[in-house]
Image (cartoon, rainbow, N blue to C red):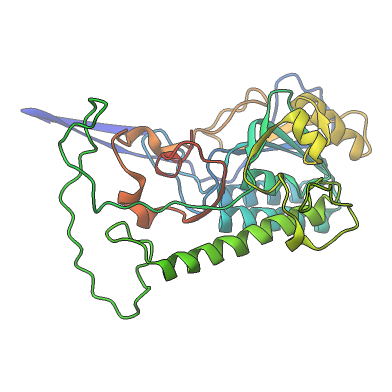
Length: 350
């Protein structure tokens, strides 16, 4: 980061992000013994969207592109015997997480190397969708997972009060007066706009899209993990051999989140374990007893332990009074995301 400050009367400041664009390199983590063979830990953190997460405290990386770059680096290194996905994410956009999962499946097919997913604090929505493509899924005792639904955030700014106090005594969100000046050809071309209400037919169209994406999520995960326990109408557990996905009513894919113990009962997680145990399992699946652990970093990034993350959260400059819908054009729309906090898509992460 390079900053230039000029002052004349009132102070004005500008910052120029000087991001290192060199390829990622494998850094041996502290505590790893020297070995020719390697287990590569690939970190998947924060909100997963197909766009550069720029901001004052961000590396400005595109999570989709960075994930592919790290997979390619592992692919190109013949000493890498296995990969561990270290996942700490509530999910992300449908398209972004689907692309990441596709790249992971292709990596496994092309290299034949085992992949172990390790869910950290949170591994939900599209992040779990990604994890389900691994050979095994580990989660810590206090991990939260699930959130397997589709959400489309729409906001109505027509009735927002400006500079008035609500009943709680807090100031209403401050927004400039907004007037719609749209010239349309196609009556649904602006469906979901925050500047007008959603028509019933438009709602049906969007619900149909969300339903299709939800079916993709569900069918893909069940195909990879047929041991998942779903409930059929009437409460009867689905037999793994029953393949009529449209008949499933169950709890796994209704968007709720689970503890690790609950996720194991539902078939979402294979083992309770920390990252070190996931790395040990990856060595075993890779057919080696000893291997050094590496992570992929750019030269201006740190890699001291297997828990280090790249700062890639652009929300530090966002006002807490902002409404996500006010910058809707910059946001992912359909999301595989556990989202109790409406500022997720505004801030780019928790």
